Image: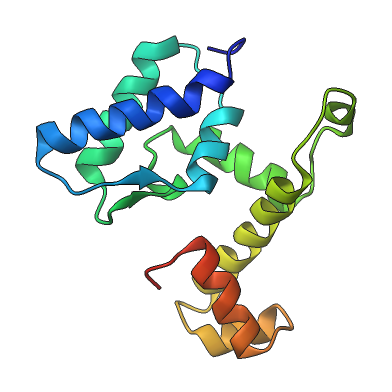
Length: 149
């Protein structure tokens, strides 16, 4: 799967549908952030690992959308990915083969919004202050990444 990244999203969507039905859950899709997370993950276990990951995530999800934090990848791998976003450690050499700048910027924004919410224990006004945003702007950004908040 490392060589066929385009298949990850299609396979993941298939497994979400399969396990949502099997487990009686009403999960409709993976968030764009979750898809990005999956595309960046190396999947040493290939398709079987992806299927097991999605099955666990569907079983444990409390929302109708699979978010990155719902993905049950080992915490050290998730931490490395999030640190890369927070520290802007994107491989600039990727530009040679093409990148999705909007997605990269969205990932960075999402990481900061989530971290701010975590730091202030969900207080939107305080999170907006930490990010030097108006409350209205913060709510808009939060709604883009976490529609149920």
